[in-house]
Image (tube, rainbow, N blue to C red):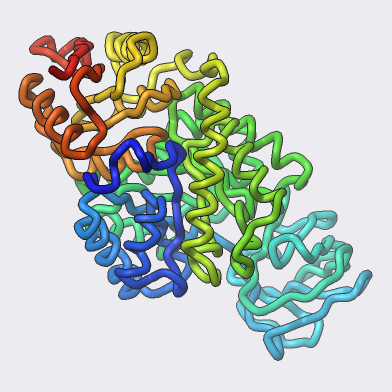
Length: 483
């Protein structure tokens, strides 16, 4: 943790910011600048850029972490079995209302009104009456006939399409596996380079998540799996998927095409509430400050969108094109951070959510859960300056995070990856410290706090840790007053 920037005068937002790396922010200086502005997790989108570029980005993020002297996490986002259009003549095709087009079998299209896709089984799995959405849902087709040549469609929602744009099939049951060959290659790379989180796209069932977690374990990886919710099948089996995953991303882009866009806000709230109940970190993503790709200021609706996601209980909000290809990446981060801080001032005066303590987080024993709840209440009643939670795995820090306590919280660990993964946990500031000896930990925190200007004589610290009774989990709450 950067001592110089940790004083009480400039506390960071408790809501974490995830920023996507791209051409607009891929140098070491630019990444350092975004981290200093408030980013704690950097996303590598495997649907874009080469492996050599991703490796360079990973190295730059780790170098920025060293430069700032604080942990920064990496989220590797798998592309998944995304269906895309093939090449179009002239790269662009305008589709008029009621125009008829064909999806040809195979990877290429021969005629002027034929379309091809990257999914060879598309025609076989389409049925008459199915909807086909193109270009992020801006163009809509309906299947009206199918034969040995292909599937004939009528344009129901006109517009322009380009080569390689996405194809969504709302309600169509596809046989494609959750991970492609490229996804397996990227997952192996993520495990080998020590990525902190791995985003699994187009999750349809908890088995998809469990298979990826098994694969990571087979490579002795501690990378955590983030299930991206963007399919109707995932919503139908939501609780099982959230239970299986280490965290969730509400991927509103494809989700808003796969289901009625009017349902997205309600589904978003449902997912967020369930993640609070099951004590899983949740990232709200897609078009949060989309206009800032080309404008230095967001719209009022975008600012409200970010604020409402935070009020609902999002642990993190994500920037995509805003930082990857936008003209104002730093301004987008600073704006999101400012909205978060202002919103959190209101959140601090709201009653704690009842869902927060109803279920235990993965890896948290009953004694630990009770101790975390007690420590949170004690810190408020004693007007403590800090809550400190010592954790090898980070599970206890996550459980404390879900209490939504507005007493500043420091998560300590002796494991680098645990500290980086805490970067996603709401309100938790990671700090490397010796955690096996209580006295040494208290002295470390007191020295750090005085140096940073965070602690002074008379301040109280509430510390959550464990004693020799290891089987009981975190069974110690210590209140320390600085002399």
